[in-house]
Amino acid sequence: MVKEMRVQSNPILSFHKNSHVFVKFAVCFVLVGLAFRLLFSDSALSIGLNLPVEPPSLAAADQQETESSSSSASDSSLFPVQTQNSTVVDFPGNNSQTYGNFAVKCDLFTGDWVPDPSGPRYTNESCHVVESHQNCMKNGRPDSEYFYWRWNPRDCELPKFNPQSFLGTMRNKSWAFIGDSISRNHVQSLLCVLSQVEQAVEVYHDKEYRSKRWFFPSYNFTLSVIWTPFLVKAGIFEDMNGVSTSEIQLHLDELDKTWTDQYSSLDYVVIAGGKWFLKTAIYHESNTVSGCHYCPGKNLTELGFEYAYRSALRLVFNFITRSDHKAFVFFRTTTPDHFENGEWFSGGYCNRSVPFKEGEVDIKDVDAAMRNIELEEFEKATAEGSEKGLNFKLLDTTYLSLLRPDGHPGPYRQFQPFAKDKNAKVQNDCLHWCLPGPIDSWNDLVMELLVNGGKYR
Image 1 (tube, helix red, strand yellow):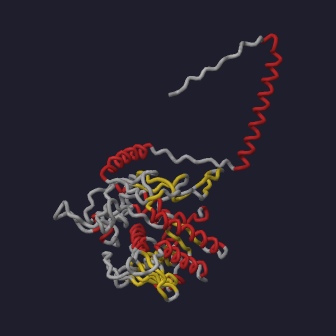
Image 2: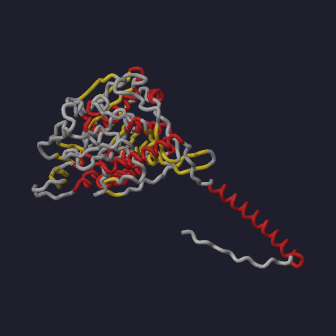
Image 3: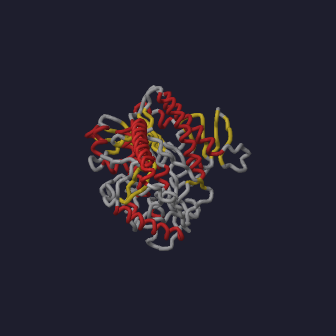
């Protein structure tokens, strides 16, 4: 209820008795106003007017976002967001970019997914390197709305990836994605976009096709993915479907030579870790077992995945910052999954068809813990690396990935999963990304950091 406010007016003064008082008052008022205006203008100019910049008006986008919001609301009754064991994480804007004469806050990794009618930059037919588990179109996913969104950072512009410019910059260079299957997912996305200019030639793969190398003859450019899910030395007893026959043996004080032996030959790397540290593992340090993660009945000290992840990242960053070789290094943060009502092994699914909006989803505790460790260790590494002229950039894809529950293969990680039985119970993939899909926007971020890296942290 709005309260009515009444003001008592003073009796009208006699003008012919007090005109000189009125004139003095008016003159004083004008002088004070002028002085205040001059003072304020000088102050504003001296601090650069640190004002926010309004994003461009997108009437069509606003309408589509409204429709998407309604769709999301209707979906939520069927597929509720899991908020148990989750936490809210602040993703602050801490970078700056210049707009005209004004310096404003700019964070490439905070923003919204907005409608993009131009759609995907390639298809599963124009690109031949898409692995079957990410080939959602071929596998029969019936919807295509997830194609028509692009990442729109708050308060700054993000150009679309230019494959011609990228390949021109990479002439006579080598680039590697170092990490787990998400890194392999990303390199496939990059290869698909680059195929618009030139098809890469595969020149190497390991026995299980997890590590691969491609060559672009016209540019003498080599692009690789080096599979090393822990970045440190590990004994892994698990097949391609995630079935394990024994606990992982993880050496927290020794890096995996699979990537360190190649590091000196690389000009650019994107390095990342994450989800594998949640698996049951026995930890080794100084040639002895120091503890474990989730190993009941083993009579070992439960150190937890946080301990192992921090130890591994610290070892990785120490190697990079103290290496005589100065590669251009991107460190990518953890990627949240979107399993609902279970995990990948217990019937979890991801059936949403539109992105989340800000405030509609919370990050899970494990993902928040991982990202906090990543940021803390990255800050320490950049402080040391900056003194040695190291090119070290944070590729913070956590938040923008959190908002895309619609971009995963789900049941369409396998070919036509419901062809024989519409009610078949199949394993869902709510971690990796369909190709084409949201992960293609990661290339836009990489290109911007590569070209205009000086503007950002």
